Length: 290
Figure (cartoon, rainbow, N blue to C red):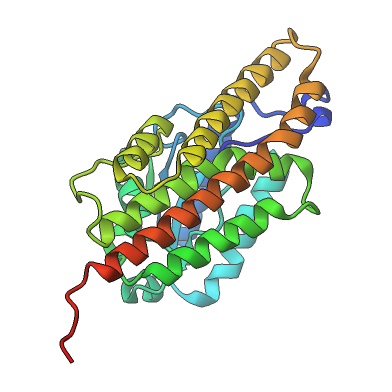
């Protein structure tokens, strides 16, 4: 996740530094070690930029936590949320899974996320036992599941009641998040080579989408424009934090006006191209003789 900050947070000095993010990871590690000793969690594994030691001010802390029992989930989540509030550094708490559920495949990890976690270095990032070692992957996602995911993303992007910074963040994230999920699904159904090395890099996702031939041209254009807007936001934030940018608020509100509609256009193109892909796959199946 690449955070977006309000002008009030930027001008008020409330944006964490990369050092703040790493310090929060260290503090969370100490809490998790105590939870291992207390038998509330089996293990945890950090991944993403903090696991590589390269966070930015926009980074959150990605961690997969496996509890020893489902009854511990809410307790562990409360500890994580409390630390997030006190440090102002967001911590992913959607990957808190009981071990008995992980072993049965009752979790939200798909193969792409599993591989993303496994690519992070183990040294300094595993607390207790590696939760991946007791996580069963179940590749049961179908076309309907992917379309439900796309519909959910489109609904969130169209929700004008959400805070501006959250809508902008979701819009800037959409190309990589939705694009990567599409590529992973196409690999699963045999439309793309399983040998593709997919990661969170924007250009890698774009190349895979281009190779798939599934997206309309205007959606690829929206993808590229959103990448440019994300770069613009990143540069504007860096200048503002150095005290060399007085127009942060202007850029912020301009992006809030422009990016969400582009993200919706991109996601609509994903839906259109995917439906056409499904139709093509259905018609290519051998027809049953009557």
